[in-house]
Length: 144
Image (tube, rainbow, N blue to C red; front, side):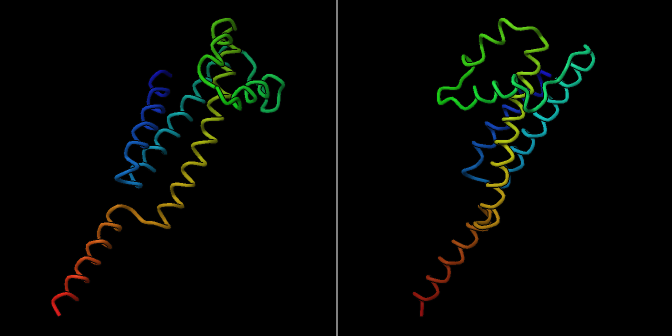
């Protein structure tokens, strides 16, 4: 579980760092992050299932409360700290499931936007080739 969580976070960071040089790499790394979070989600489901604990329904009052916390402007770990430090493992696992769903939703939107941008603008190799061809074209005009 720890490795899946760490991989998700690290691949988001690496993907964002790669955005300036390669949209293709950024898309791949964000997809890897998404897959890691999906693995983590399944781990939490397995934890609850093996401990015969309920998984909150998407629109249960508890899940809605956690989702509402995520909408605050100042959301950070401190937003959830009290719950994580004072609640049972079952509640913490369900909170994590809600947060993973939120992160996955946002990553899905980011991946979609990146793919659209890549289709419209191309990758760095395409842009570099286009720029190089433009320079050659201007150089040839200058020789004539």
